[in-house]
Image (cartoon, rainbow, N blue to C red; front, side, top):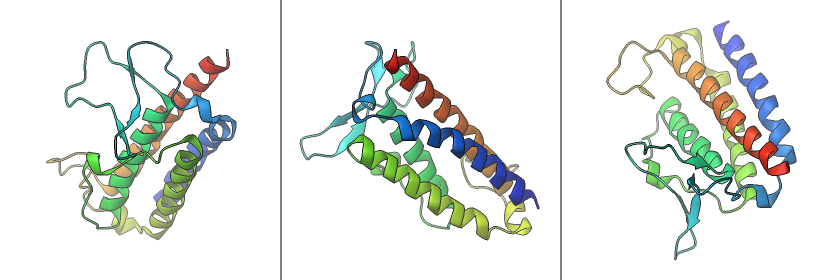
Length: 169
């Protein structure tokens, strides 16, 4: 079944992610490797919000691990909303949990929710039109969306891994 191949690919990517998650230290998350960084910032009410611009700036800022972990949580939460038939949340509604341990727990919870949703999908579900992440494009299926999740997660895992390794120098 196609779902099994997509699940295998996801599990492979997650094993690479888990390797880095296990080795992250609390101080790694907000470390800024350069002056041109995007991170998450605590607001007066105690919530954490990411740096963001609707049009990507030039040069592109280097994200912190905290920012990348928020980014994963954002797109994955919205993808789960779509897969589970919920009203998708807006980007501003997805807050970073506030520290490294909480971020890791949040990402692991999203993984579990994703696996539950993924394991329920049938071939017919995989063939359905995906409403996300391609607005106004009816040519992509839920199977494409799952492939996108795997690719996006792999890219973000590589970013976190590289930042972790640079911080260890």
